[in-house]
Amino acid sequence: MKILVINCGSSSLKFQLIDSDSEQVICKGLCERIGIDGSQIVYTPQGKDKITKVEPMPDHNRAIELVIEALTNSENGVVSLDEIGAVGHRIVHGGEKFTKSVVINEEVIKAIEEVSDLAPLHNPANLIGIRACQKAMPGVPMVAVFDTAFHQTMPEEAYLYGLPYSYYEKYGIRRYGFHGTSHSYVSKRAAEILGKDYSELKTIVCHLGNGASVSAVNCGKCVDTSMGLTPLEGLIMGTRTGDIDPSVVEFIMKKENSTVADVTNLLNKKSGVFGLSNDLSSDFRDLEDAYVKGNEAAKRAVDTFCYRVVKYIGSYVAAMGGVDAICFTAGVGENSGFVRKIICERLGFIGATLDVEANKVRGKEQTISGADSKVTLLVVPTNEELAIARDTYALCK
Image 1: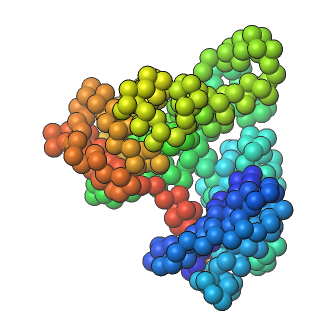
Image 2: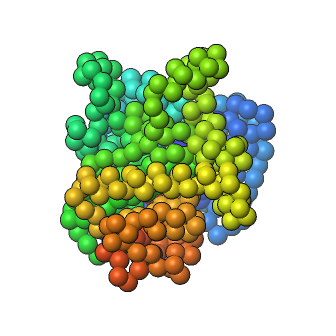
Image 3: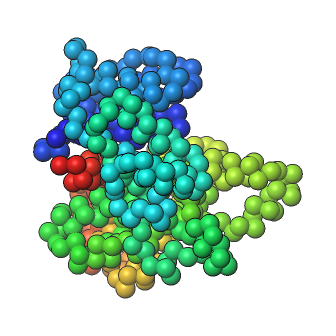
């Protein structure tokens, strides 16, 4: 079965066409600046060079039309429309309603709408993508795969905030976690690499990128994760604060005569390593280059980021009563041996040692722990699209 994977953002749409039998990517691409001047579609058919077409995209309906045109055109197309057996949609927030992927129907759409206030920038865009695909491909089964679903195995003690319990009962205010498809894929792949039973491993997954999170996976179930009600909680990230005293919001509002919207924008888009580096960059490649050259602002940002990762790893070792494997994934985790080295050098307290030569790997599966390490350290490239395709195939085959 050929499965189309769709990941809609507010002004973008990522896609991949995957053969579920071979799990090969037949074509992948991105629609950029939807609803904005200068929109374009960039796609790469298997075995061919990248193709870029500047096209007006007033909305996601047009973006979906262009995706289908790209996949099926006579010159560079890779499939006929009737060969697409199912569509898998990434949905950011499923609240407590969804603990696993589901076939999309009107009831599911309504439920996604009901939790959209928990992800106002993402769920509405995800729903637009679903409707656009339904319009363009009537009758083709579609599946919703939720970022939050993998974390729904967390126990109450891990997901509750110290607020009056009535706020959880009335509004669902609790920790949900995100990057679930990545944490699920990487923790399962780690078990395969190690030749161990997934249900017997204690694994910590460090999804480190512009958005970053850590999860504790105990015997095949997520028991804790760093992100919360929204993706703002947890690690320091590219432009997000991560954990912060809530009173800081009121303090800044009074000092700067700011609104809630102003401070929310500050916490999400102007903070993190970007803010810590005095606005030098939110890109770790830039920060690493500057760090090596002795830039104190870059050093401050990277060291603070790494410290927070180590602190979460330590807390999750305690939560699980030990750890067998620690995995590094996503843009920074997969590609920055520099950041991995800073983190791993602080893990001696759990008997972890780093193989400096193996740690030079970029973007490939690699065991990077030393021969005497009591914990296996792994680089495992994430593949969220494949995880979505697998769930879609399982429900539609």
